[in-house]
Length: 52
Image (tube, rainbow, N blue to C red; front, side):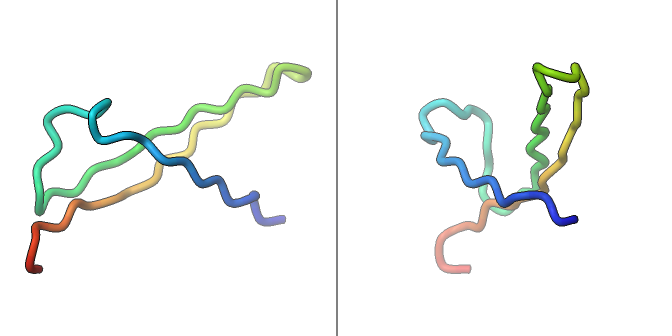
């Protein structure tokens, strides 16, 4: 069964040391408060420089 799509907007002012043309990995940790299960999702993303 596919996991639901999660979309979140993070203000760039909250992120430091991100450089254009570099690949990054966002790690999302989800804890089910009822069962206590914890899941970790890793989401790759890249920052393109202007004009590319």
